[in-house]
Image (tube, rainbow, N blue to C red):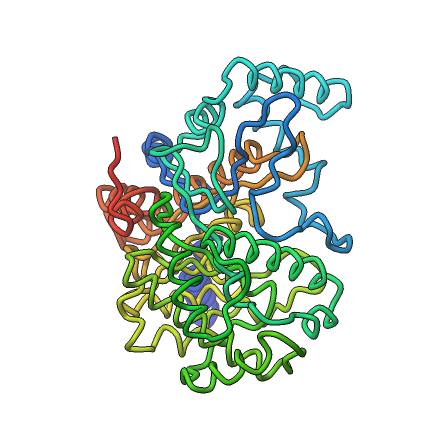
Length: 451
């Protein structure tokens, strides 16, 4: 006969083990995505909500330097995360998929061979090369976040997201330049682009009054960009200052502008008042024009980046401003590492987020946990993006795009498989959610015409 005490101990141990299994994160319970779901997700033609593709450059032309407004190449050296280091063997997969790379290593002679194949494909495809890349990545439409579009980056496959940060900084930026070395090159780039916007507006110099600056430069720039095909505007302001934009009355902003427009260096606190006013003015004008506002909210490149600006909660006053409820906002890069805070803001009627860049910074398992949080909360607010960008000839926008597409699909499949296994959704609902994230949410938000 069994000892009752021993039986009780075993029952207690079994119950404890069962409870522990139930409490384990889903990422530890499920090790692989459902194969059938993976296969279906692979067929979905994606809308890439955020990327930096390069225009086609012909022999003898200067390199494309308009893929972003900030001169990242001029920053002090800083370490890159593992997945975007040149030695990451995952890029071998990109070379296989894109260029038929015949090797399974990164030997120097083999990589040179791949680069020659890439050059040949670019010559053969000519102006169609960027669209050739999209076809191989399974992307129907890519949103190009650039200073301006160019050869090969044409609608409907490529849609422009313009950059409007320069409009926030019409006064002297010398005080900000002294704060850290990265700001020296960043503000120089913003001032150069503002001069370009002035010229495009047929304005020879900054107007004397804030009202004239708004009516002759700011609003005309937004209207012109929309006429030229912009589908949204982008703020990279987190690289330049805090993302805390207070409500500032017009009278206060006018005083700062009038006092320092011609001479002097505004104190940072006073200059912030003008910038805060201009941000909200721009956001309201974007709402009038039907241009969603993209805001970079995540950890950023460089060793001087202020990570406090990665917190979406700094935008709480903006999201809660009744005057801005007609403007749609998209948190670009998901607000990482504060992705749960991002999910909370999906309860606002005009706030969305994409998970671009997380697709090459994080591995699929880690990204799937973020996506599951979001999909269990407000799946209609989640947008796919790659943040494909040029780094080196071997690891250019094509390769980072491939890594992002591959990771994004894998992570989505894992998240949805776990939700299916836990009885939260059916297989049919999982496929519906996959289509929403990869394309249908973007189609609805931007009123896109698709194939």
